[in-house]
Image 1 (cartoon, rainbow over the protein chains, first blue to last red):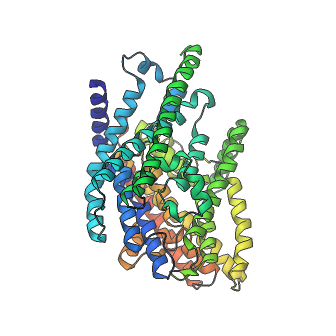
Image 2: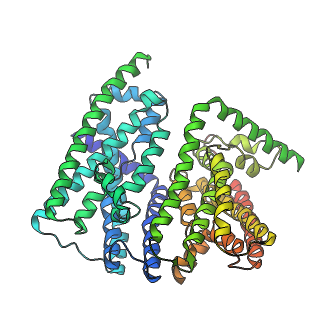
Length: 262
Length: 262
């Protein structure tokens, strides 16, 4: 636990020392939702049919902004580099798991990004008149759990991709493939209901929806309580799957790693 | 002049040989980059849904924009961005002092240091797609339109190169610039949409801070006859200004450079 707190602290200090860097990252992250919002407004102004109402679209992207702050996990290139350059060894000698470091770094990054971005998003939300979600007590509980699971799932998946480097030498092609599917099926760029029905059906079984879209759909009021529960169940399954996969691949990979004499 | 051309070709050949060493990766990247390009077409299709036109652009025209944007992206990632990103890294590590000791213009040397061949196929596919899509737009395309299109693309590349180079040069003072790649990506992807979707104030901000219109909007406007040939001269003047600024900023930065070791 103390190791976790320390690595969170390290990440925050590192981010504070590279303030301009964080600012650039934050600004880049803001651009996509803003462009998508402008695009949907233009569609509606030209008489097109939106996947949600105009107010619904505004709510969707504002919630997306906020929710994504605490879900995003970008571990895979760093883990991949650590493995490739043999930098894992010092971590393996410590009495704490390597993933505590990674998770701490991830949490620290989330704290920093929230500090920078939350004021901006809330300002944007007020400006665009986004609404506060109308959920009952149970639904808020489901949302909170779903948000938490999405963050865990995303973290696990990015770690799994990173440790594929034990076998693949470079995780960048897997990363790219993941990014592609994530782009389409996670609801990050456009709401999933904008997709053709067949793809929506496929999307309900893939893990990508459960990395972002599910909590977003819940809080946007797009689902009935029954659907929320089903979604939550599938999300649990995928999370357990990737947690197990991570543990398994890590053990297998370490065996291979030490065999090379690192 | 000949010396610079020869240096360019030598570096190009060197990078090509290095890439061919890892042929399997080239295979993977070829398909990956193609999928990304097709994805952007898919998204454009999705957004249009049943509406005929958005912000004065028909679906077909928007597809042309998307393809042009992909082409622009591919060329930038081929020739410009890897070198600029390397440059950012080298400032941080203090590695680039050697570039200053060579008897050639240092800005040039840094800017040609690396080429990435990942996107080579995408450029050709995009040209083929343009060949197919443009006649469907139903406007007369004369040789002047095509010339204007190519020229504006070229000027756009110069503008974006100068813009990225100037931002990276800020690394002399800000040191930690790891998020540049995100910023560059955002700046290019935003240009894939018609700038008309933004209303006046937002558009002015984006136009003067990030010259997005040059990615796709301006070249396609000239190609499809939505704007006159005069736009090419706007491009020429802007390109010259940006290039001039980047050179001057570079010299200014060098004067204030404090190396990591000396």
